[in-house]
Length: 77
Image (cartoon, rainbow, N blue to C red; front, side, top):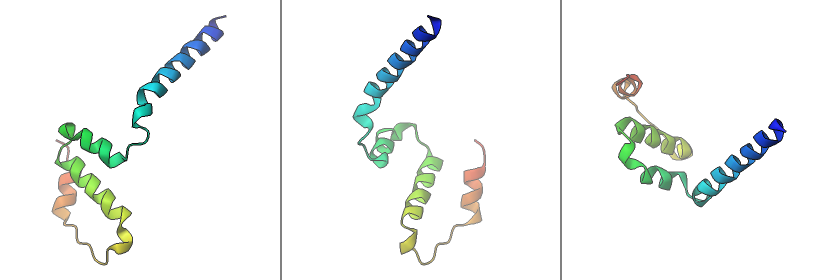
């Protein structure tokens, strides 16, 4: 009996989560990040820029990234 109740509760939580997040499933990740821009800092923006570079890497012939930039990303706040 207890296992059945736990399964029903898990199913209900899964259903609730699915219904809560379903409006966002077709959003582009870039749009979701723009909607959350208020909580992002410069490191997040640079990380997303690196992601964009990686997605378009076939178009890049030469890329220079300074050690200073990388070091600033690796430092803790």
